Image (tube, rainbow, N blue to C red; front, top):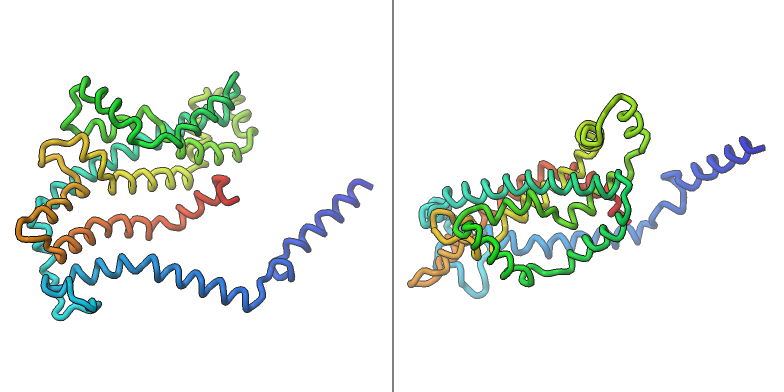
Length: 300
């Protein structure tokens, strides 16, 4: 009797979830409306990017024309060469890449360890502590900015890269912990039990079982933090003093400090070069990014 009911339930589930069923199929007018809305949103979000790239190729006298000219004439590719020579662009890029790579590696390791403790290890008070951790997401950075500066000043770290990447190794991001914890909870406990029977320690389970199964979500955490470090302006502005240690975000400010006025075409050319690596990185990792978000429990 039980087998027959189970078979009937599975048969009904397959009928309900069938891709071609009427319940799962949008009507043609609704599908066209949704696609039109998404297309309009895409154009709206692409507008600043297209304007930046257009201005990067214009002569300076065409950057402020009204009505604006979308297609520069003539196209000045040498704006990019002048932009990287206007400031020590490659030195700033090297500094930014160093901070981003060290910080990304640190946040992946620290966040995954903390998430493992909240998802795979049973200990008293685990859930209340996790709620406190999530509550820290509501604390804005300006609230902790002065105390952190005092700590780093006493450590004699002001003027170095350390305040920008060392905290990532010890202060796991609450959002990244939440993201990884949600995925770790979906990994069957049977894998842990099998590893323990083979003599694996808790750290061995974390390193040999959980991490290899979590690569898409780890990639999402890495991408988020890399983009944050690459675009961070406030942190370098507070902690860096010497111009030789400046990042790209700070370097762009030199284009606006010119006495004769801002060279908008050079500024947009430099901004294009700053944005390009992030766009290329997301283009090549978008499948992993979407897969990691979908598998982490944030899809609703």
